[in-house]
Amino acid sequence: MGLRIQKDFFIYCVFGAMATAVNMLSYELFYSSLKLPNTPAVILAWFTAVTFAFFTNKYIVFREKGRKSKHTILSELLYFYLCRAASGLLDIIIMFIAVDLLSLNHTLWKFISNLAMGLCNYIAGKLFIFAKSKD
Image (cartoon, rainbow, N blue to C red; front, side):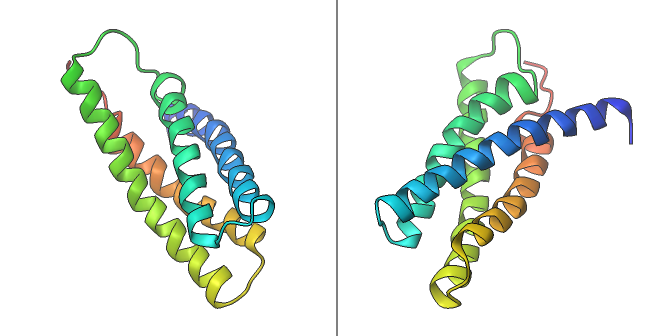
């Protein structure tokens, strides 16, 4: 693995951990404090974390600089949310099975779910969303 790839992955992991913290803390707020049902709490936490992740991924992790066309920015935004929606669906499925069906520890399974989502999101961000464009 090249030094550049290792550095990129390390930076992604740092901000991924921050997005995971945003996701988990939001979920705890919605589920435990506000007593929302599991699935709505997962969805709201996902939305909060994805909003945070878009800006940190775009400008810090994948170091987007310079002016881009409106079309390119909107495409990135669309692809980012679509890719995150797929991992968000994975989150909902994992949490539904673990918490609603099996009555397992919600905090532990939220963490496990975030690990699975993080890997999927890194691959999507690196290969599809923020791939170096000629724009």
